[in-house]
Structures are given as C-alpha cells and as structure tokens.
Length: 504
Image 1 (spheres, rainbow, N blue to C red):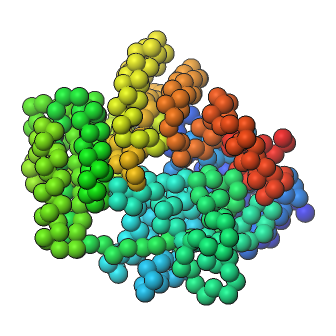
Image 2: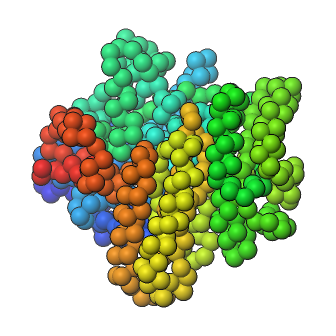
Image 3: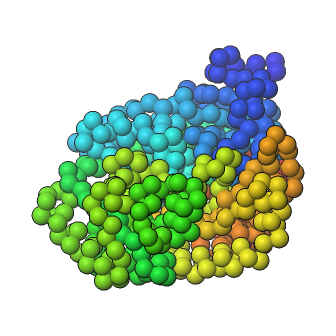
C-alpha cells in the first residue's frame, strides 16, 4: 500500500492529496521568497486521526508540518526541502464548550481567533488578547504555538498564552495527552492550568510546533466591559523616546489600559503623503509619529478617571490630542470600532507586491528607541543592496517597524524589518532579489537579536538563527534537544526548526 493510500484510509480520499496543484497551494505563507512544496496534504478532523497520521509518519520516517491559518512569515508552516506531510488543521474549527459559569471556552485548535470572538460576542465575552495581528484568520493553535500578541488587548492581557488553561496534544509518536487540570483523569472539565505537578502546558506554549500537535485548547474568556474610550495623539520630535517615557509612566502608575500603540514617523509620512494609507492624517501639517490608547471600564465614572490620568501623561509629554472623531485623526477609534485591529503590519499591500520581511519580538520599553536607531544605521550600511532591488523594482526597500504595542509587563512588541519585493516582478523572475532579501533579513535579525530581544514567532528562519549565532547557552539548547529527542525520537515533527533535523 502506498503512503497516500494509507493517509486516505485515515481521513478518506477527500481529505488527503498528493495532487501537484493542491501541494503548491500549501507551498507558501505570506513571505515573498520562502517556498516549500510538500509531498502530501492531509486535513484531519480530530486528535485520533492525527495520532494515526503521526504513527505512519514515524514508520515511514517522513516529516510532518502542522499548519493553522498559514499566515506566519518565517517558514513555520511550509515544507522544508520540498518533502513531508502538511497537516492542515482548518477542519478542526469547532467550539467544544463554553463554560459561562467558570468563564472558560474549549475549542478545537484550528478555529480562528475571529470566529471564536464572533461567537463569544453573543454572550458579551471576548478572549482578552485577540491573538496575533492576523487574528481574524489566524488559528488558536498557531497563536498558542507562538505566544502571539498584536490583534488587540495585549497591553491588558499580554500574550494569548497567558489565558491558556489546558491543552489536548498529540505527541510526535502519536500518544494523546491532556495538560493542566485535565491531567487528573477524574477532572470533569478544564478549570486551572497550574497544579498536578509541573506545568507541562507551558512546554507546548511558544514551541513553534516542535513538541506536539495541539488539537483542543481551553482558554479563559472575559466579560467585555460596557464602556470604552480611545484617543490618538500626535507626538513631538524624538517620538520614539517620548513614547517610551509615556509607556513606562503608564506602567509605573498602574493604569489599566486595554491597548497603547505607537506608529513611527516614517510610516505616517510615507503612508499619508506617498501611498494614501492614512486618510485621517492628510489634514495634519506636521506628519510625525502617532501614539494612541484604548481603555475599557465597567462604569462611566471609572472610564472618566482612567482617561483623565492617561490624558495628563500624554499632554505633559507635549503630545497633541487629535480630537474625538476618526475624521479628526482618531486612529484609535477606527482601530477599536471599525478596523478590527488589522494594522499590525502597516505596509502590507500599499503598492502591488510590496511585502514586509520582519521579525516579531519582545523587548523592554526603554530599549526599543535604540533598536530603531540602529536599524536606521543598518539601512544606510546596506544602501548598495537596497539600490540593486530599486533598480529592478523601481522603488527602494524601506526599513523600520510596524506598530509598537505595549504588551504585558514593561515590554513592547516590535515588528521591525524592511519592506521589499518578491523575486517575481513585471512577469520576470529575479533570483538576485531573493538572494538579497534573505541576506538582508538574516543580517537584520542578527542585529536585533544581539540587542537581547525575545523572538516569539520563530518558524524556521529565526529559530535556526538563534542556534547559528550562539544565542542559546549550550546547556539550554541541549535541554531543548533532549526533550525533542524524548518526545520525537525520529524528529519527524516540524523538522528543522531550532536546527533539529530528523537525521541528526
């Protein structure tokens, strides 16, 4: 019996394919240059089917790559070396249970943050952190695999793994386990993550899919407060430094903000003057950085007090309130009431085939202005390569950062990188663009990494770079490797990430 026949026996012929067109449909994510064509694509419906697929993959010694929404930029959900089985999780998108009394929702891992939050909104609830910046389409399982933030609520709730209660996971060898309160087989429903021994739930948080396939996820959910306010401010000069001071003061005074985000000056200038990205800012005479906040409250009095405290901080730093309406430039109101938090990567799509090549990382508030300045220097040092792309595409790549959101603790999240073009331009393939993009990407990742940041969405590229530049101590890396070897002796799951290969 062939491998495709074995897979079809598990999921039926309809949900397993080795057709070239299907395989190519799964060969990319949003990155303009990375590509990997799998040998097979399988769409399981439950943990039992995944268990059987992984058992066969171990017998055949073939890699398996879990894929949720497929939005990641770092090769995490595509085949490496044009081999392996893509495990498409999108059939597993059901809501298993909403425990309204204990405020815990259990879902299948392939469901999107958008679908889950639409369902929860009928009950006046939400997930707190709304997942990654691609949250309307990103899967819950993918978010947990990356410690995702970005789609709203991360200043108040932090990364989405903070609200995680328990998991059902299929281990690389096919065994199925439950974590958290469900590690006790007498527990009738998920209610708490910690206890029953070590926090094995945490082993699968941010693992980028190397330790197991998440199949069922239980999350805390929260009542959505009935009152909200949102304000947007124009920054003075040296906006990054000013915003760092503002964010620090918000944390030091313990003010409960739902979100606070910064959009730097180059994005406002280019986005408004060149690309028409921000029509609400066209009337501004001075195109400088923008900073905004969103607060929620359970009463008008509570809301007024929060707004009063926050406005004092922003105005004392010489920021200019742009007014209450979207037409005044109130980006926060658009973001919260209409935009659905979809401004995470600001430069996507502003001109045809313009793409972002970035990293996503956490760093202390007080360190991000220095990182942005060093990226400016890096941009000038790489002028020659930038010009080579400009000569072909007619537009020079732009380096910098997307929005800078405040996340849990005294940290921000940086989506720093550069906008560029894919290797196809005007109907022609330009290998030189791909080569330059990958060279610049690794160079910039290394620069940012040596500032001591925390990569969280890592995929193949940043996870392997961490190893290649010696960012991990040998003791830490060897522990990761030994856990991988114990859970996946053939290393077939997400092979290659963190330089863990099946033939090591």
